[in-house]
Image (cartoon, rainbow, N blue to C red; front, side):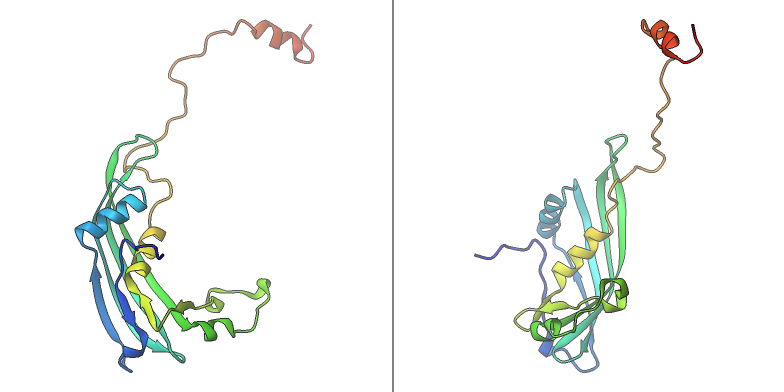
Length: 176
């Protein structure tokens, strides 16, 4: 049994023109609602991606572009909802399983972003909707704070003398 994806737009890699193509995808209201639930957000007002797909290697593709989202988040300080925006650049390579698995291992000390393994092409297809949702999630603030809200840790009132303050003073070195 396969799990239904909240936002899916499948593209066939073998159908890409040699010069590539640009596609724009937009989540429907039902898809945005499902994604908001999945990401535990109050709402997603808009989610779009403009992506450039180009053939890459043998049976692979390179996807570049941008994801834009308008959403509502909850402030970690005030717990109030507030509007937020996500704008994330996309640059991902996809390769068939055999090509992705055939790359020789690289020592962890020498890894760079350029050495990042390509994502797999599955049954000759890539899911642009899932890719857009992934980059949307990467752009979410992990601890969202409503603009202008500050976290004040200072005490609200002056502390009163503790009933144990005499004991603390007696325990300090040099106080007899």
